[in-house]
Image 1 (cartoon, helix red, strand yellow):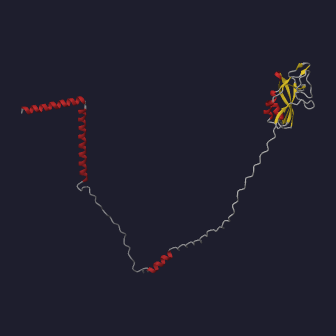
Image 2: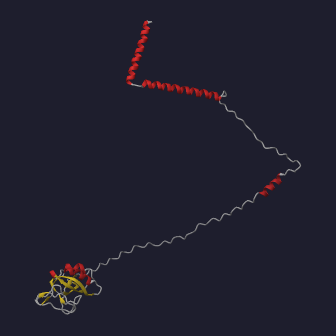
Image 3: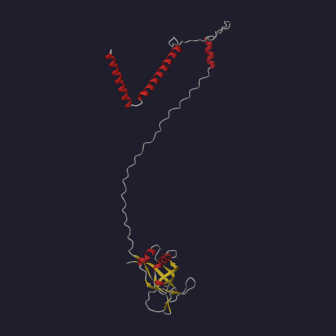
Length: 274
């Protein structure tokens, strides 16, 4: 008996040691496990209670359903034997008279005949016409358009490129406000490339006559158009556009250069052939 008691005591001590190590490793788990066991026991008790109540409500018939049938029948109508019963022929006639007449069947239109077309007339194939020989364009006449400075004294005056000393020639007409007008004398004739770009916009050949006011550096300014030929050819507009390049001597009066006096310049545009 002493050995059995010692064995039981050893088992308890071993279990206590295991529980102590369990608490050290997982603190609070045994306390939570006790709460969970109590909650699980409560839930099992509620489940057994619900099952007991369900069995008492259902009864001993194992839930079998019973079916109750109710039939309804119309009341029998008494038949009057004194009235004669209608014969089948009379019933058929009355039904035929009561039915509306059947609608007439629409007549089918006659089938349409396929249209006939005349056989196509075969036309002989035309051979393609031979290409016409292209006529070679006539080469234009070789020539150059250039500006020619006229120094004829008979017509309207241009700068007469004279190198002799003396006073400038006074000509008819005047400036915009009646100022004296002199024939211009070139300090340097304009180069053809200076005029070509402007005169290319005009319809030549022709000429233009302009009056300009002399300025320092042999320049001219405030140029105005006097006349052009042909009229409306654009010669005057072209010459006015190129006038900023003109270099002329100011008029000489009494041996002195009169800067600010007005001069007349004529530019003639003609076609020159080699």
